[in-house]
Image: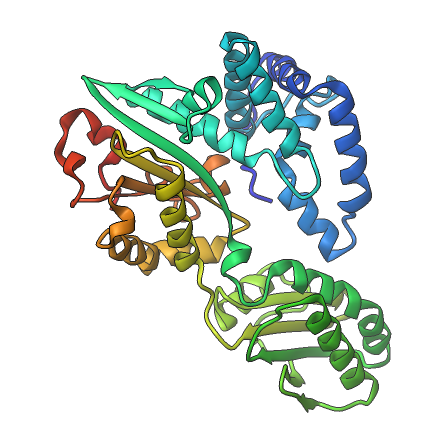
Length: 408
């Protein structure tokens, strides 16, 4: 999924890791973890698109549960070691907090083990605290200890800053959410398998959706339209909601079972497209579905909207403020595109010119690719994107530069 496959650590490290993971699980409680794993087993079915998406969404929880199992093989990747280091930080933090703040931490853990929520917000907070501590700041968990609106208070050389962590789903910026796409593909697949068995070959179904998918009803309508196209043996169909075109799949030098097929398709259709490949690679048959909304995704605008809200509601204005956004459910190509095109940087810097940014000395953004320790170009070079607000009075304070200086 996102996890590194670098050389493993020694067996002793894995044993210590097992104890660390079990200590973290104990913070939430054995019953809560048992219930969570049973719930994920029901929903994270590997043979469905929605199931695979659930496995990816809850990869952190599944990883921690696996590492806590003493029967695991004595191997540990650097990514797993990074996750365990943050789990160890959580245990240490819990041990140092008074009773009420400790209860607040446990409540956050339990919230992350409920429904569609994840542990990502907690680990984002822990990672931020660890990174700021490594930069020489004295870090106080003011949100937990004092119920401050922000999460961390940073102090260094007499300078003080407030840091608020926020997790934002990339789904908010998509005109066709991935969740709807996965449900659509799962719904189409039974009819598609029947059709492909009767029509062996290589096919490409292109879907253009002017307004994207905005509701389950629209998704179900599109599913019926695709199934009708296949059943009627037509090659084209159009409605106000979707334009469908079925063509032979022609990719020179790419076999159906080739591992490069997904990357070639991504090159063809770009980072905003939704792609699904099904068929019988062994027999040479393959069916590709590629869907495009009529408008580009608005991930950068989504990040800025949350920056504005957090600056207003999560920072007091008494000290320079930093908002650290964790962009969740972002695809590899999307995240790289936001960085390479400077789209996110441009949107944030334009936001800095507005009154809503008055409390912000800096804004940062990271993703799972940084959390799990991947290397560039998948991850940002400095472990995050960060932009300093040059108009803020604290922009030049020496003691804060390690936390607010731009990574560009």
